[in-house]
Image (cartoon, rainbow, N blue to C red; front, side, top):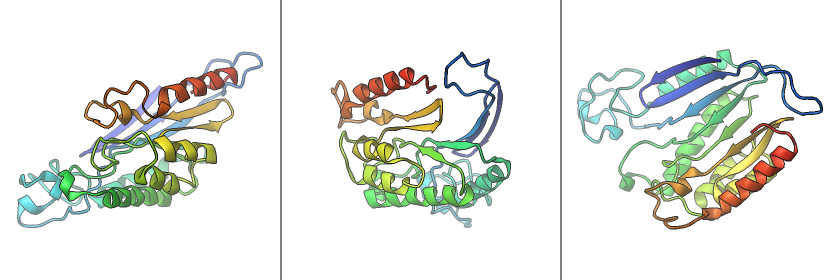
Length: 242
């Protein structure tokens, strides 16, 4: 199994190549051959990043700590400048083939104090990254997920529809089908068939995250466990890999 990883400051991009599959069982819908996908996660865009003589003012995400070696593509103490994200995507696009797809597992906003963000700003950053990905990969399907920073206040994702879930569903409409968009807008999770025999399930694991006080002591927040069990049962009956 081939794995190429490129790690840059607070930006992780993975190119995964699947190993050849064994011969599919008779009368099954398992996919033959191989497949590839990109994994994009934790972009943490910091739109305030800029080069300045004062190292404490290079980026707001450093929280006043002096940047040690700021350059065009960022600094270790700062979240990702837009130029870094664009550069990574530019290179990824040259390696992407028509049958590839992308898994994007969230966390687009920067690491800044809660008082410096708002629901509108979080949605704006998610929208910015959505459009940037779409511009670089116009013909590739993306399967996104929400991270703990993709909500305001951070970590406190609720169990029912809200401005962030609805905005995400609208932003990701070009990639997802109506059934997926419905559960995404209601609970931040969804399932969708990638191609015959292969299904993706995107869970809202922030509902179970320790710092999330909204779902504290809930046994099945948003009914996601029940939904997942039914989804997996249906996938098994259809001989789908998940």
